[in-house]
Amino acid sequence: MNFNADDEHFRAEVRDFFAHQYPQDLIKKAASAFALDKADYQRSEQALAAKGWLCVNWPKEQGGTGWNANQKYIFDQELELAGAINPVPMGVIYVGPVICAFGTPAQQARWLPGIQQSTTFWAQGYSEPGSGSDLASLQCRATLEGDSYVVEGTKIWTSLAQHADWIFLLVRTSHETVKQQGITFLCTPMDAPGIEVHPITTIDGRHHLNRVTFDQVRVPVDNRIGDVGEGWRYANFLLGNERTSYAHVAGKRMQMAATRALAEQHPVLADDRVFWQTFNALEVRLNALDITVLRVLSSLKDGASPGNESSILKVLATEIAQDITALSMQAQGYPAQAAVHANMPSETAAKATADYMGTRAQSIYGGANEIQKNIIAKRVLGL
Image 1 (tube, rainbow, N blue to C red):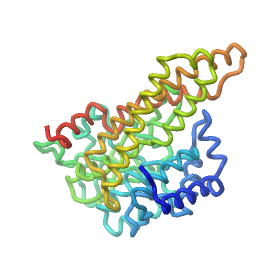
Image 2: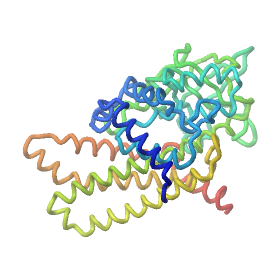
Image 3: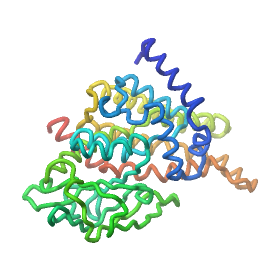
Image 4: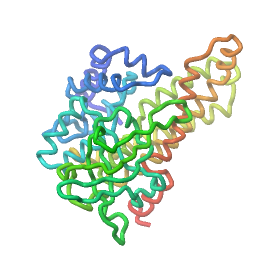
C-alpha cells in the first residue's frame, strides 16, 4: 500500500490541478443538495480534457493517459477528495472503450473526439421493461431493411437521456436458441425521427432516469459496432468497466469522515457504542474494498476490461455505499431535528437524504447484486 516518490510527485500534481485549475464553483455545487445539469458535467469534463486527463482508461494511442495502476488509483482518489465531479460514465467509461476496441477506424474518427472533448453526450440503452438483470432476454428489435436497421422497442432506466446527443443500445437482430446470441450493438443520434424520451422522477425528487421509446427508428448499418449478433460480447466488455467504476473509495472515505465529525459533536451519538461499532466495521469493509480495487487495477493491461472479477467490486461497493448513507442518515437525525425546531432547514440533511435514497438503486442497476453473486460463483470460482 506504499507509493514511491514518483507516485507522490504525481499526487501533488493532481492535487494542485484540482486546487487551482479545476472550476471551484463546480466543487461547491457538487457538495450541495442542488442537482447538476448538462453544462456542469461538460465544464467539468472539459477542464479534465484540457489537461489530457479525461479518458484515463483508454489506450494511449487513442487518447488515453498511459498511466499505470498506481497513477489511476491516485487520480481517482484526488478527484473525489477534492470534491470534483466524476466524469459521466456513458461516454468516457462505457462506450468509448468499446469503440476503441471494436469500432472501425471511421467510427473511431467519428465518435471518439466528441467524447474526448466532452462536446458529445451519450446515453446507454440496455435495460428494458421486463429485461433488467436478465439483460439477455431483451426484445427491442432491429430489422435490416436495405442499408439501415429499423429499431422498434423500449429502453428504461436510461440515465441522463434527456441530455444525450447519442445513445448506444443493444437490440435483437435474430432469435436464437441461446438468448445471448442474436444481440447487436448499435449507435444512433437521439434526435433521429421516432425516438422519444419520457422522464422518470425518482424517490429523491430528481429527474436523472428516463424511458426511451423507439418507433420505426432508422439506424444506418455503418452505426453498428462490430459484427451482427456479437453485441453480447461487446456488452460484457463494457460492463466490466462499468462495474469497476462503482468503487469510489475516496468519496466513501469523505462521507465517513463527515459522519464521524458530525457524530462526535453530538453528545448522544458520541457515547453510542452501537453506532461506533457499526462505524468501525464499515471502515474495515471500506479498507478491504480499497485493497480489492488495487488488486484489480494492478492486474490490468493498458485499455483492458476488468472481466468477471469486476462483479466482486460491484457487490462490495454497492453494499458499502448503502450502509454508509444509512449511517449518515442516523448521524444527521439529531441536528436535523434541532434545525426543524429552529425553523432552519438543514442543507446537509437534505444532501444526506438524497444520497441515501439514490444509493438504494445501486444494488440493482448495472446488474443486480444477486446476479453478480451468480457471476462470481460460476465464472470466477467455477462452481
